[in-house]
Length: 120
Length: 494
Image (cartoon, rainbow over all chains, first blue to last red; front, side, top):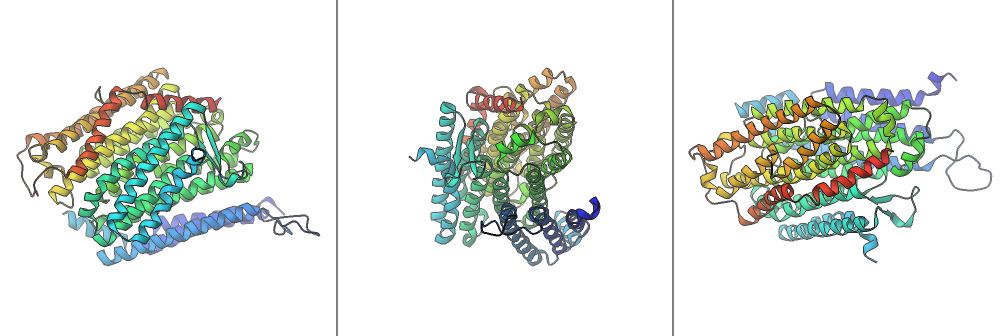
């Protein structure tokens, strides 16, 4: 396989990463920003998992008939990262709910307009 | 028996008390538990400092799994310095929190605030003590998530937006960090920082390592508010509850600086970093820009808390400048400034918390402070002393660290950097004077509930103010500890 196609997992990772960052920056809706953030975090899972998977590799338990094993450590790390991602998303959503309650909007420009109206 | 388990107790103590506080649901218990834990952490940090001074670096294998397979906690001259800074601030802010939280946070939510405070403390101490790259990420997220909640508990609804924005930028920062760690893991197959450092020197393919360096620098740069990645900081500091601002301003960014120091000097090959890459130039340029721009913004800022928040961005510039100058004097200055700026800014925000309580205002503009010296003489006086330390007047803590930074700049022959340090200090004098002028020379006006700040709050504030002066005269701990830490970093560089 060519170097380009052989690394397809990395290309998908990079695409997800950049797409997440783009949504995060370009969208004014607080909820959509969180979706971008979740996408960015998900791309990291792939960055860790893809190189740890060996084609034909089994779970790292010594047993007859198996000689190639996948590296278990990245999987465990990403399990932790998923928990962190869920916690972040939950907190983010809770903040958006509170912002909706107090401002009556989840559009960034409307919130900033309300804030500057407060100051003025 | 206990003594050998101190490194893990340092983190587990606050981590275990946080859920207890949530279970007890009682504000009084929460406060007592938080205070006891903070002082316990300080005692452990000091005990560790004594051990490190006596017998050198301590390595603690969690669950007796030896490094590099298990997670290692590593206490050396640098990390113990930061441990003392964090737990010292925590134990000064915790007694102060009682009145401040009672006034600023709804009663039914107060115990949650204490729980978050303990979690944040556990996270910051964990970042400092761990010797494992991924463990560091987990603690980074523990401290960050609890910080977002602390900020969101502010009375002003702008606190919610500030917390949301900080959450977005902070999470991007942490994600970038973990991307960097992933790349390093791919190249070395280890997560133990010391082991990683040894293996990185044998890596031939440099491009992924440089990408990792870039991701980690930008990611942690976001967390430490390195100019121009500081956009989240002013609002977060301004709208958070007073005690949260005081604690975060004194510790959170400092711990991130520590992470940068650790990676730059003890993980990556500094020969490559400083010889083949413009690391030095980039750090000096960003620091100088931050010092000047943020100080100028502070000069024209009307909200007092935002004024001092921008001043924090400028002071972080001083700290990173020392990293860019990269010699013994400048690193000593940098590390000393972590502590000196910590107590100075902590003192200022603690005092402003007392003012907010007595003035009963949501947003405090500089003009609101008119006549402060007549209404709250001790508070006003404390602000003056801490302000002098911020400027760097001889006899205060700020002077000592700036002195070492200037020595470091001279050693490199960078005269213009000395000029910038002095110019930024002059601007600091101007914005501190704005506050002092209003407080001392303007006639009192506006709403006031009477009295000095409550005694509990005032004691914490004055203790920090006294430290501002104390570290200006007796530098045995501050400069002594910092110099040992700097030596450690420079030895690792060899």
